[in-house]
Amino acid sequence: MPPAPVRSDAGEPPQRGGPSRRLARTFDRHPRAQLGGLLTGPMLWLLVIYVGSLVSLLLTSLYTTDDFTGNVVKTTSTANFQELFRDPTFRIVTFRTLGIALAVTVIDLALALPFAFFMAKVASRRTRRLIGVAVVLPLWASYLVKAYCWRVMFDPEGGVLRKTFGFSPGFGVKSTVIVLAYLWLPYMVLPIYAGLEKLPNSLLDAASDLGAKTGRTFRSVVLPMLTPSIAAGAIFTFSLSLGDYITVQIVGGKAQTLGNVIYRDFGSGNLPQAAALATVPVVIMVIVLLAIRRTGALENL
Image (cartoon, rainbow, N blue to C red):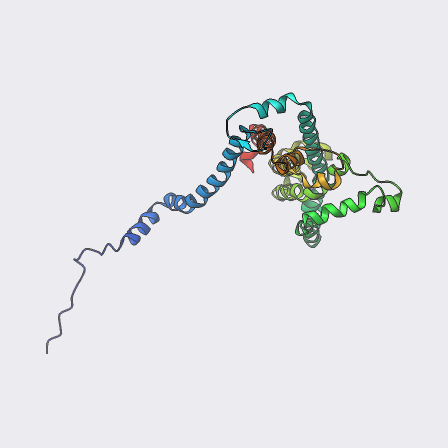
């Protein structure tokens, strides 16, 4: 018997497949559209949460509170912001909070620079790992546990410092700065350490061969390359200190900052006043970010 003829499909047009297959081929030809499709959902969700909360905050700050019933009156007014500018107490609290945040940032920077330099350029690989674990390990502990441990140390009546050395700073602004500097120190060390790891040792050797001393090498070689890392750490420590209110309540004594004043107004039901005061740290952070952006540090992060 003669063999059966072999069918050939070479002349038939290829099957197009279903809509999902055609969509997949379209995304394969356009990688940017594929990336946009992956990020659109999460970005929209974050946009709704973040921008929606800011809009809600701004709207609430324009409302007022009825003096007799305590209910929120949804009529727009700038009375809350006028009160912020008119009452000197709010100015004092704002400048005190700014001073605390700046002090914490400067202290953490002064501690983190030599610490991170030793980790990145001096310590052996094993020692570097141990120090890295020691830096990150406090972040695993509870925020409240660490704050209350410092309260036990600073207690002016029978704290650890009082019993051991006969002296204690007590509760106040100094204690708040110390505790916040301790809490946020890892957020300054890690970015600076990452920046120093990218710094080639050959640049330091070249500066030394050219006769530059330690101070000149740091100013001319190390500091310019560390500016983005320092900016990142400063943003973390400054913003976290600016909005903190728990530490002030635990070790701050009678000191008032923006965070616990907002918390007090919120707890008393004066939501419009609390929302108006909450816009102050938001505006401060916007100004700080714009100032850092002008230096070009954010583009190099």
